Length: 87
Ligand code: FES
Image 1 (spheres, rainbow, N blue to C red):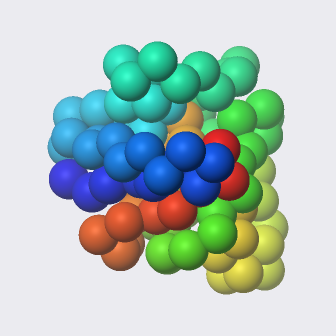
Image 2 (image 1 turned 45 degrees about the vertical axis):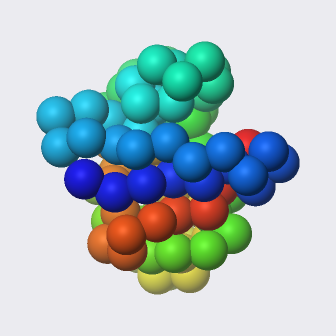
Image 3 (image 1 turned 90 degrees about the vertical axis):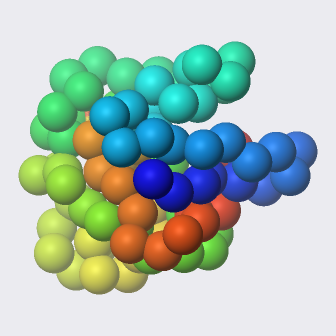
């Protein structure tokens, strides 16, 4: 489990093991637009301001993934205890 922080409000949402970031945000009332929910389309792409995502998508190039400044919250997770998202 890890946490995501919404940069705009400072709100912190916990993402349990069995839940995607999109699901955890939705449960907290924060909607992120999705389409494929499998890391293919890039619809859910979200900017990451702090922290290291655990990229599970096939949308970003390896270089884009390594930059750690965006991720796909429909399927990707976090390597750090907290991600700060531009939401
Ligand atoms: Fe398609 Fe996340 S919804 S990559």
